[in-house]
Length: 255
Image 1 (tube, rainbow, N blue to C red):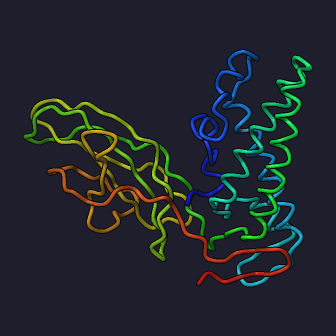
Image 2 (cartoon, rainbow, N blue to C red):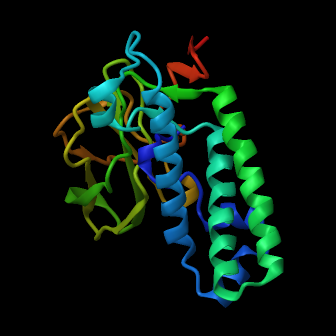
Protein backbone atom coordinates (compact mmCIF):
# COMPACT_ATOMS: atom_id res chain seq x y z
CA UNK A 1 0.00 0.00 0.00
CA UNK A 2 0.99 3.63 -0.32
CA UNK A 3 2.70 5.49 2.49
CA UNK A 4 0.57 7.94 4.45
CA UNK A 5 2.84 10.75 3.22
CA UNK A 6 2.39 9.79 -0.45
CA UNK A 7 -0.85 11.77 -0.69
CA UNK A 8 -4.49 11.50 0.30
CA UNK A 9 -5.58 7.86 0.78
CA UNK A 10 -8.89 8.74 -0.95
CA UNK A 11 -10.05 11.01 -3.74
CA UNK A 12 -13.43 12.58 -4.45
CA UNK A 13 -14.62 9.43 -6.20
CA UNK A 14 -13.77 7.43 -3.09
CA UNK A 15 -15.93 9.81 -1.05
CA UNK A 16 -18.79 9.44 -3.54
CA UNK A 17 -18.69 5.66 -3.16
CA UNK A 18 -19.31 6.06 0.58
CA UNK A 19 -21.74 8.99 0.35
CA UNK A 20 -23.46 9.32 -3.03
CA UNK A 21 -24.71 12.87 -2.35
CA UNK A 22 -21.37 14.34 -1.33
CA UNK A 23 -20.45 15.90 -4.69
CA UNK A 24 -23.78 17.72 -4.87
CA UNK A 25 -23.55 18.86 -1.25
CA UNK A 26 -20.07 20.23 -1.88
CA UNK A 27 -21.24 22.04 -5.01
CA UNK A 28 -24.28 23.60 -3.37
CA UNK A 29 -22.38 24.67 -0.24
CA UNK A 30 -19.21 25.76 -2.06
CA UNK A 31 -16.99 23.29 -0.21
CA UNK A 32 -13.63 22.31 -1.74
CA UNK A 33 -13.54 18.53 -1.34
CA UNK A 34 -9.86 18.25 -2.23
CA UNK A 35 -9.00 20.76 0.50
CA UNK A 36 -11.09 18.76 3.01
CA UNK A 37 -9.39 15.52 1.93
CA UNK A 38 -6.02 17.15 2.67
CA UNK A 39 -7.24 18.45 6.02
CA UNK A 40 -8.55 15.02 7.01
CA UNK A 41 -5.23 13.41 6.02
CA UNK A 42 -3.35 15.92 8.19
CA UNK A 43 -5.62 15.23 11.15
CA UNK A 44 -5.39 11.44 10.75
CA UNK A 45 -1.59 11.79 10.48
CA UNK A 46 -1.47 13.82 13.71
CA UNK A 47 -3.57 11.19 15.47
CA UNK A 48 -1.32 8.35 14.24
CA UNK A 49 1.80 10.28 15.26
CA UNK A 50 0.40 10.77 18.77
CA UNK A 51 -0.20 7.02 18.99
CA UNK A 52 3.34 6.18 17.82
CA UNK A 53 4.89 8.67 20.23
CA UNK A 54 3.24 6.75 23.05
CA UNK A 55 5.39 3.68 22.33
CA UNK A 56 8.96 3.20 23.56
CA UNK A 57 11.60 2.48 20.87
CA UNK A 58 12.01 -1.18 19.93
CA UNK A 59 13.89 -2.65 16.95
CA UNK A 60 13.29 -0.12 14.16
CA UNK A 61 10.23 1.29 15.93
CA UNK A 62 11.58 4.68 16.96
CA UNK A 63 10.34 7.17 19.50
CA UNK A 64 11.05 10.56 21.02
CA UNK A 65 12.86 13.12 18.91
CA UNK A 66 13.58 10.66 16.11
CA UNK A 67 9.87 9.97 15.74
CA UNK A 68 9.07 13.67 15.83
CA UNK A 69 11.56 14.32 13.03
CA UNK A 70 10.35 11.40 10.92
CA UNK A 71 6.68 12.03 11.60
CA UNK A 72 4.55 9.44 9.79
CA UNK A 73 6.83 9.00 6.76
CA UNK A 74 7.20 5.26 7.49
CA UNK A 75 3.47 4.58 8.00
CA UNK A 76 1.71 2.36 5.45
CA UNK A 77 -1.95 3.06 4.62
CA UNK A 78 -4.05 0.00 5.43
CA UNK A 79 -7.60 -0.55 4.11
CA UNK A 80 -8.80 0.28 7.63
CA UNK A 81 -6.92 3.58 7.64
CA UNK A 82 -8.19 4.42 4.16
CA UNK A 83 -11.77 4.01 5.35
CA UNK A 84 -11.04 6.06 8.47
CA UNK A 85 -9.72 8.93 6.35
CA UNK A 86 -12.77 8.83 4.06
CA UNK A 87 -15.24 8.87 6.95
CA UNK A 88 -13.33 11.62 8.73
CA UNK A 89 -13.37 13.69 5.53
CA UNK A 90 -17.14 13.28 5.26
CA UNK A 91 -17.55 14.36 8.88
CA UNK A 92 -15.47 17.48 8.17
CA UNK A 93 -17.51 18.29 5.05
CA UNK A 94 -20.87 17.93 6.81
CA UNK A 95 -19.57 19.93 9.77
CA UNK A 96 -18.80 22.80 7.40
CA UNK A 97 -22.10 22.38 5.57
CA UNK A 98 -23.99 22.54 8.88
CA UNK A 99 -22.10 25.62 10.03
CA UNK A 100 -22.91 27.29 6.69
CA UNK A 101 -26.66 26.70 6.90
CA UNK A 102 -27.45 25.44 10.43
CA UNK A 103 -29.47 22.78 8.64
CA UNK A 104 -30.50 19.88 10.90
CA UNK A 105 -30.18 17.45 7.99
CA UNK A 106 -26.49 18.34 7.76
CA UNK A 107 -26.15 18.10 11.54
CA UNK A 108 -27.42 14.51 11.55
CA UNK A 109 -24.98 13.61 8.78
CA UNK A 110 -22.15 15.26 10.69
CA UNK A 111 -23.01 13.27 13.81
CA UNK A 112 -23.34 10.05 11.79
CA UNK A 113 -19.96 10.35 10.07
CA UNK A 114 -18.24 11.56 13.23
CA UNK A 115 -19.33 8.37 14.99
CA UNK A 116 -18.44 6.19 12.00
CA UNK A 117 -15.01 7.82 11.81
CA UNK A 118 -14.46 7.20 15.52
CA UNK A 119 -15.26 3.53 15.04
CA UNK A 120 -13.00 3.32 11.98
CA UNK A 121 -10.18 4.88 14.00
CA UNK A 122 -10.54 2.21 16.68
CA UNK A 123 -10.58 -0.56 14.07
CA UNK A 124 -7.45 0.90 12.48
CA UNK A 125 -5.64 0.86 15.80
CA UNK A 126 -6.95 -2.62 16.55
CA UNK A 127 -5.62 -3.91 13.23
CA UNK A 128 -2.35 -2.10 13.80
CA UNK A 129 -0.40 0.79 12.32
CA UNK A 130 1.89 -0.68 9.67
CA UNK A 131 5.48 0.57 9.47
CA UNK A 132 8.43 0.03 7.12
CA UNK A 133 12.11 0.19 8.04
CA UNK A 134 13.19 2.08 4.92
CA UNK A 135 10.31 4.17 3.56
CA UNK A 136 10.32 4.67 -0.20
CA UNK A 137 8.18 7.72 -1.06
CA UNK A 138 6.04 7.97 -4.16
CA UNK A 139 8.19 8.93 -7.14
CA UNK A 140 7.79 12.29 -8.77
CA UNK A 141 6.63 12.53 -12.37
CA UNK A 142 8.78 10.71 -14.91
CA UNK A 143 11.20 12.85 -16.91
CA UNK A 144 10.39 11.93 -20.50
CA UNK A 145 11.98 12.88 -23.80
CA UNK A 146 13.15 11.54 -27.14
CA UNK A 147 16.33 9.92 -28.35
CA UNK A 148 17.55 8.52 -31.64
CA UNK A 149 15.38 5.70 -32.96
CA UNK A 150 13.29 4.37 -35.79
CA UNK A 151 9.81 4.17 -34.24
CA UNK A 152 6.83 6.07 -35.58
CA UNK A 153 5.53 8.99 -33.55
CA UNK A 154 3.46 7.62 -30.66
CA UNK A 155 1.64 8.89 -27.58
CA UNK A 156 3.01 7.08 -24.52
CA UNK A 157 1.90 7.01 -20.88
CA UNK A 158 4.73 6.59 -18.39
CA UNK A 159 5.18 6.02 -14.65
CA UNK A 160 8.26 5.40 -12.52
CA UNK A 161 8.84 4.04 -9.00
CA UNK A 162 11.77 3.77 -6.60
CA UNK A 163 13.17 0.47 -5.28
CA UNK A 164 15.01 -0.12 -1.99
CA UNK A 165 18.00 -2.40 -1.29
CA UNK A 166 15.63 -5.06 0.10
CA UNK A 167 13.56 -5.01 -3.10
CA UNK A 168 10.65 -3.02 -1.67
CA UNK A 169 9.02 -0.82 -4.29
CA UNK A 170 7.41 2.52 -3.52
CA UNK A 171 4.22 3.81 -5.08
CA UNK A 172 4.46 4.66 -8.77
CA UNK A 173 4.35 8.27 -9.88
CA UNK A 174 1.27 9.81 -11.39
CA UNK A 175 1.09 9.06 -15.15
CA UNK A 176 2.90 11.33 -17.60
CA UNK A 177 1.91 11.39 -21.27
CA UNK A 178 4.33 12.28 -24.04
CA UNK A 179 4.05 12.35 -27.84
CA UNK A 180 7.18 11.27 -29.67
CA UNK A 181 8.03 12.21 -33.25
CA UNK A 182 8.65 9.87 -36.18
CA UNK A 183 12.09 8.24 -36.24
CA UNK A 184 12.72 8.60 -32.53
CA UNK A 185 12.64 6.57 -29.30
CA UNK A 186 11.03 7.40 -25.96
CA UNK A 187 13.50 8.11 -23.16
CA UNK A 188 12.61 8.07 -19.46
CA UNK A 189 14.47 9.20 -16.33
CA UNK A 190 13.34 9.16 -12.71
CA UNK A 191 14.63 12.42 -11.29
CA UNK A 192 16.22 12.83 -7.85
CA UNK A 193 16.26 9.63 -5.80
CA UNK A 194 15.22 9.47 -2.12
CA UNK A 195 17.83 8.34 0.39
CA UNK A 196 16.57 4.75 0.70
CA UNK A 197 16.40 4.07 -3.05
CA UNK A 198 19.03 2.01 -4.86
CA UNK A 199 17.21 1.73 -8.20
CA UNK A 200 14.00 2.42 -10.05
CA UNK A 201 11.41 0.87 -12.33
CA UNK A 202 9.78 2.25 -15.46
CA UNK A 203 6.24 1.54 -16.66
CA UNK A 204 5.06 2.45 -20.16
CA UNK A 205 1.86 1.87 -22.13
CA UNK A 206 -0.19 3.22 -25.01
CA UNK A 207 -3.13 3.92 -22.68
CA UNK A 208 -3.49 4.58 -18.97
CA UNK A 209 -4.90 1.10 -18.44
CA UNK A 210 -2.09 -0.71 -20.28
CA UNK A 211 0.96 0.79 -18.53
CA UNK A 212 3.27 -2.11 -17.59
CA UNK A 213 6.81 -2.73 -16.33
CA UNK A 214 9.44 -2.40 -19.07
CA UNK A 215 12.71 -3.21 -17.27
CA UNK A 216 13.73 -6.73 -16.24
CA UNK A 217 15.79 -5.51 -13.25
CA UNK A 218 15.83 -2.20 -11.36
CA UNK A 219 17.63 0.55 -13.25
CA UNK A 220 20.56 2.35 -11.67
CA UNK A 221 20.20 5.71 -9.98
CA UNK A 222 20.76 8.39 -12.60
CA UNK A 223 20.29 6.01 -15.54
CA UNK A 224 18.14 6.91 -18.54
CA UNK A 225 15.87 4.25 -20.02
CA UNK A 226 15.36 4.12 -23.80
CA UNK A 227 12.33 2.21 -25.03
CA UNK A 228 13.26 -0.29 -27.73
CA UNK A 229 9.79 -1.81 -27.93
CA UNK A 230 6.94 -2.31 -25.49
CA UNK A 231 6.95 -5.50 -23.42
CA UNK A 232 3.99 -6.94 -21.52
CA UNK A 233 5.22 -6.70 -17.93
CA UNK A 234 3.25 -6.42 -14.71
CA UNK A 235 1.14 -3.43 -13.75
CA UNK A 236 2.41 -0.88 -11.19
CA UNK A 237 2.14 -2.17 -7.61
CA UNK A 238 0.38 -0.65 -4.63
CA UNK A 239 3.55 0.43 -2.81
CA UNK A 240 5.44 -1.01 0.16
CA UNK A 241 4.16 -3.73 2.45
CA UNK A 242 4.24 -3.12 6.18
CA UNK A 243 7.10 -4.92 7.95
CA UNK A 244 5.73 -4.53 11.47
CA UNK A 245 2.53 -3.35 13.14
CA UNK A 246 1.95 -1.26 16.24
CA UNK A 247 -1.34 -2.08 17.92
CA UNK A 248 -2.31 -0.80 21.34
CA UNK A 249 0.59 -1.55 23.63
CA UNK A 250 1.96 -4.30 21.42
CA UNK A 251 4.44 -4.46 18.54
CA UNK A 252 3.69 -7.21 16.02
CA UNK A 253 6.09 -8.58 13.41
CA UNK A 254 4.62 -9.20 9.97
CA UNK A 255 4.02 -12.87 9.28
